[in-house]
Structures are given as C-alpha cells and as structure tokens.
Image (cartoon, rainbow, N blue to C red):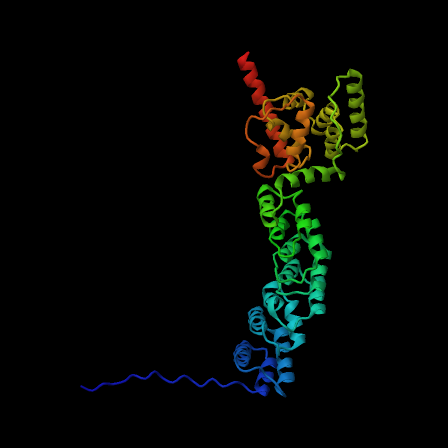
Length: 380
C-alpha cells in the first residue's frame, strides 16, 4: 500500500505593502483600491508598531483614509488603533469626533487622547460621546469635574458607575446633590468607594428602602437614628427637648388657622414642609387644614384618615402632597401624640413597599376612603 500525503495548496504570501504603495492607494478612490488599502492598513496594524521614516507617511495615509473612506473602513481603523500608542494624534482626534459607533473604541481606550482632546469632544460631539468619555477608565479629575458641570443625567450616571475615575470628595458631593433629582444616580453612588458616611446620611433622605438598607449595612449606622435625622433635616432644625403640651380644643383658633392656610395657599406659599412644621409645633388643626388645602381632598376624608384604625389612608394623603415616605414614620409618631394615639397601628407599613408618585398616592387615597365609606354604610 502506498500512502499519499495530501498537502494543501500554498497560500499566496502576504507581504506588507510599502509606504509608497499605501500612499498611492490612499489617493485612489476606486472601490478596489479602498479594499486593498484597508488590507494593507490592517497588515501594518498587526505588525510591529511603525517607527522611523514610516511614521509621517503612515500618518498621512491614515488621515486620507479617515476623511475619504467608507463608514465601515473608519470603524475598523478606530478598533485597530484604539490601543496603539503610536497612532497619529490628528487621526485619533478625527475618529473621536466621528459618529459614536466609530468614535467609541478610541474614546474608551486610546492613550493618544489627552484631557484637552476629551474636553473638546464633550463640547463638540453628541451626548453619546459624553457618555463614552464618562465611562473611560481612569479619567482625570479635570474631565470628571467637567462632566459634573454639564449636569446631563445620563452622563452623570455613567460617571457614577466608573469606579476608576479620579473623583474628588467634592465631586462625589456634587453627584450626591444631583442624585436628589436623578434617581438613576442613587444605586451606583451607594456602592461608590469614595462615598463618605456623611454623604451617605445625606442621601438617606431621598433614596428608597433597599438603598437605605444598603447604606446602613455599609456604614454600620442606626436606621432609626437616620430616620429621625431625616425628619429634622426637612425643616433644617434640631428637635428641641421640651415638655409636650396637650392639644387644646379652641374653635376660634381652628378658624384662625383655616384662614392662615387659605392665605398661604392664595400666595402660593403653602408647601409640604409647612405641614411638617405644624406637627412639630403641635398644631394638629393647622396640619389638617393644610393637608386638605394642598391635596384637594374633602375635609371629612382627611379627618377620617387621621382617626382611622390604620395609618394607610393618611400615608397616601401625605404622599399625595409631597411628604417623603422616609419622613412619614416619625411624622406619624408625632401625630399620634397629638391625636389620642390615632391613626391606629393596624395593617402593614405601606410606606416600606417602595416609591409612590403623588398621582398614584392620590388615587389610592380616594379608593381607600371610598371603600371604607362603603363598608361603613353596609354595616349600618
């Protein structure tokens, strides 16, 4: 038996084109020349970094290609040059300002791009370019501060998730302030390595239940103490230790407080914080009149919520006028002191279920009051 070894046909030898060949191809706009030029550029990128007399010629070739080439060619160039420390700076800057799918590789990784280059891209390019810069590993404090200065929610969120960014304590503080209005910032900030305990306690005022648990677990702080601090922070004052006075029934005072609420509302000065201050000053009637005016709910429905066996309806009424659910437990404790331990403590702590919009809270209040009224009528 004769064994025959099959040998595959030899591939044509791949020869790196000369600088002159590449320059000639770069000046040729035919589709065939573009394809050959792309193959030549890829061959050079896969080889050792160019140096010496090749560098200026290669720079001219790349710039010509970037300005005239099709989109897919520019995209491949960006991917191949993203990590090259020898890439021509002018070319990398051109690619960085191209459409985002082309710019993203160099924005994410190119060592050629300096702070001034990145700042220029932030000013001249799209929101997607800014997000790519905010995610870039190890961006400087100067670039991070510029991101925060611009205040774009999506870009700030990208920065908050970038653990390698050179964020100063002041930069983290400013992000925490932005998280008051930008909910997407809160989760990454609670896990950020540069978040301090003081800033975490500040965030505690407006984050949800799960993030509060994350904060208390990470910093080993007392959840109840933080809840009381949130209540105090709403008005910006510290609770005063003084003997509590029992509420007094005074029809004249009740009418005076109703008129005060009407005047505040007419002047556009009635706010949720005023209701909290009314409870702190032990003025239950003022709180009730204010809640009626702010919510638009009937007075009898608000009184029913204040005297109900569960705090659920009152929570919905408070949420409907903008009282934060983090404040509600302490507010409820103070109201019970003024209202003969009402509302009662039956039912679930509905304020722990999650965030609730003012519109949803108002709808839930009306539905619950209507249901309770129907049950009372049926009982009669």
